[in-house]
Image 1 (cartoon, protein in one colour):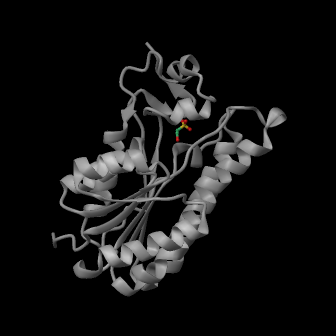
Image 2: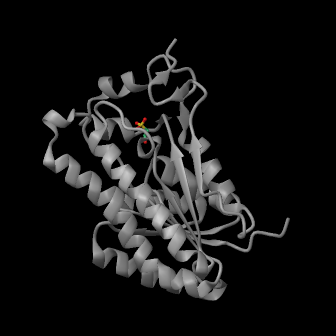
Length: 255
Ligand code: 8X3
């Protein structure tokens, strides 16, 4: 197989979970990486440990995104420019049924999962096009594929992010930009369930209770690293990744 020519990536959502693990994976694979997230202290630590460049900001803030774009142009100026954008920032808030849905939870989920992906992607497309072999990888979820009770807001946001990803793949193929979707199922991370359930540690632990081997952030980062590390003409359109114990959204084996 030809060598993968890509090497300069921006990773969002990099301060914890799958985003952080992806930065570590790509650095271990020899990539130049800019880690982007809101929490500067965590980013600084990650940068010190991995040699990634850190840039603090919010994916839903247009000024932050514009500053990130400038920073990426400077950082990667000597090594061929950015070739890969990895949109991992996202998350769930609330597990209410539609009957009790909270506007603020839905707004937050649409902002961070959908609008954040849009803002980053739109900002970086000109640079990815001019590079000539661009890659956009969007981390969605199995919640983008199957709706479930209590999932409505997260399902709606992730379905929307999935749809954006599909349209983008069609639109950008002529610019030689591959568009990859990685859709993980149950992944046990430090913060995902905790954030979703309003910081309730006990409830967050119950999500994974009895599941022998939920996925880890590192498992998913390995898949992301594999997908973006393939020779550029190979596009993994959509990769669904679940633990064996979760054969489907409704079929989770707890022992
Ligand atoms: C997370 C997967 O099962 O909580 O994106 O919807 S799930």
